[in-house]
Structure formats: structure tokens, C-alpha cells
Image 1 (cartoon, rainbow, N blue to C red):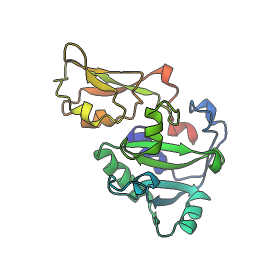
Image 2: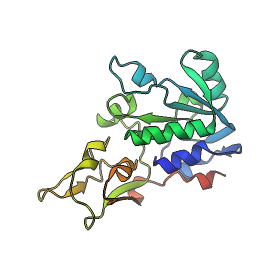
Image 3: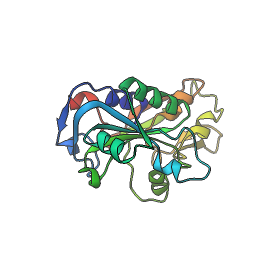
Image 4: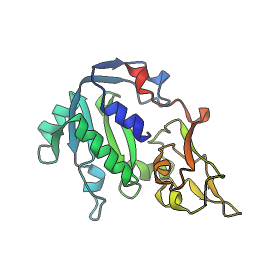
Length: 216
């Protein structure tokens, strides 16, 4: 998801009970967002980064949001987690975004199919992203794709270096192009373009974006 969506999801102030999520998020496993005490947030050491001998830093970038999940993680992983405020969570999101990492909302059958975490992922460490690269569908698009304004783009290649999904490159004329099949609409390239030549645009074939306003 883009940074702004992740920021809004972290800053929710009231309980949410949204059980028909399939009408909002185009992913069958994302059955519900049921947030009790949404301001209860735990920063957890990323299991993917922790499992690697040489990993990206910092390591405590998985955000467990709401109850009962936050308290469960804090109780069972006290050496690997810490309680943080919503403002501290937003700071983690912003710092990870500055590093070029991708924000993912996570749902698992083991977590009742409900939203329970935002992870901040890099393709070199993240198990879900590695699976996605190997055509195992663990990730869903944000519902957006990157679009290049070629009147502004200088074809410097900066965005190529930051794209975690290898969706940006040069065409035969050495102009920057987007591979829409690979683009997940994370928005990292938007913030990294020195010419402000990239925007996110809705792409119906990618599904419907998670709109936080629809949850409240």
C-alpha cells in the first residue's frame, strides 16, 4: 500500500468492525478488519530480517495493530517487541518509506483472516516478496500502478534502483517504462523520483484500493 494509506490505517482512533472486506480489498483471505483498541500497537522484530545473517536495518519494523494481537505478541515475544504510540508507528512508516521499503497490510488464516499488522518490507529479506517473485501469490496489489510523465522524466534511472518489484526499466529507446504486470502500486518510486515525474493511478484490473475512509 502507498505510505499515505498506511499512515491513515495506523492513525485510526476508533474501533472498527468491517466484516465484508472482500467488497473493498480484492483478496479472498482479507476477510475482515476488526480493530479493538486501534491505538494499541507493538513494534516487532521482523522475522524475515531476523532470520538472515546479513539483513536490512533496523529490525523492529513490523507493526502489530489492535487487540487481541498486540497484547498476544507483547506477552509471547517480550524480548522481540515493544509497545509504541501511533505517532511512533507513523515515524517507523516514514523512515522505512525513506529507505525505499514497501508497506504491506497482512492478513492470515491463523489471525482469523483479519488485518493484524503492517510490515515494512524489502525484497532482499521479505519472505512474502520472495514468494511473490517466484509466482506464489502472497501479495495483492494496492489497486494502483505507477505512471510516468515523460515531459518531466529525465530517464535518470533512479526509480529503477528503488523499485522492489523490478517493474521499472528502459525501453528500446532508453526511456523509462513501467511493466504494469509487475507493478504493485506501492508508491516507492513516486517519492524517489527527483523530477516528480511519477504518479500513482487507479488501475481497475489490479483491484480496488483499501480506502481507510470506507472503514469508518
